[in-house]
Amino acid sequence: MGANDLQQAITLHRPAKAAAPRAEGPWSVEAIQALLDKPLMDLLFEAQTVHRQHFPEGDIELATLLSVKTGGCPENCGYCPQSAEFDTGVKAQKLMEVDEVVRAAQAAKDAGATRFCMGAAWRAPKDRDVEKVAVLVEAVKGLGMQTCATLGMLEPHHAHQLKAAGLDYYNHNLDTAPEYYTDVVDTRTYQDRLDTLANVRSAGISVCCGGIVGMGEQPVHRAGLIAQLANLNPYPESVPINSLVRVPGTPLADTDPVDPFDFVRMIAVARITMPTARVRLSAGRQQMGDAVQALCFMAGANSIFYGDKLLVTGNPDVEADTVLLRKLGLNARQVQEQATESCAA
Ligand code: SAM
Ligand code: DTB
Ligand code: SF4
Image (cartoon, rainbow, N blue to C red):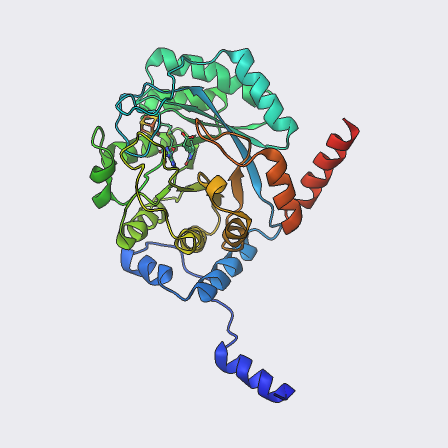
């Protein structure tokens, strides 16, 4: 084949046309479904184009999680190892003391994390719980980190109290489409979730809201989740996309694993529909492999949970992530600094 033939073959295979920047919402479920159904390479190209327009530096945000109050939760979220209804072997623990939390946050900061997210297995915190968490938030903020908390449903006065303590983000996921929600949890409603998100917004706290892929949902439910997120006005500043961690003892433990390319598609569509959000490649990375994670970054993921543990399940360790980021040429400066420090130690 001559050079001209080769050029022609390439041109015939894929007309080289840059993806047009998309207008922002409102998004119909059908429009999102159409994106999810695109040929993967076209979808990746479009997502990467949007990504580069809004995040020219291409850095990956590193957020560390800590379960500050573990297990014994009265809700029955079918995916969750911390529900008291399921026998998962998770031991309930009371709220951690401030100095323990500060030690963990300082260690996360030293490892390169910029955000620290405190999770509590509550349906909704009581006034006295919020008072205690406010102390934790203030202490972590004092270390110069961005603060995030995920504590369950919040009343307006709780949100204001946390904001006053220095809370930057509140994580509260919609998890799936409204029509599938009752298949997953029935101790609260979708509207309860939306009400908490509105309370968080009104208090001036940035919203971290996403969902889970791989809970036995249909493709239309995946499109429905993205439509809900992208049509929040404004859409969330952070969008965690979790791949279900199938924990023995939970009702969803035997669900079929999600096709990795379908997961990548969800990241890409989150990026296209919420162009300025930090899209977080969240739970499930331990089961994912480096190549799929690399595709997720290509699709526009620019945040990860960073640290050996999520809340109660595992996560790739810091060293593995450092190696992966270095191999991919991501966060070159941070990775370099960390390597120098560990050599000096
Ligand atoms: N109790 C609070 C709540 O439900 O909002 C905060 C903690 S809860 C563990 C935070 C989020 O973690 C859930 O909304 C869900 O999206 C995610 N999550 C929990 N278990 C998971 C699992 N096994 N796999 C993937 N994501 C999970
Ligand atoms: C989110 O979207 N994922 C995180 C965080 N927000 C709180 C939690 C993932 C939990 C995975 C299972 C576990 O370790 O409990
Ligand atoms: Fe409780 Fe949150 Fe787990 Fe649901 S996801 S059982 S509310 S800790």
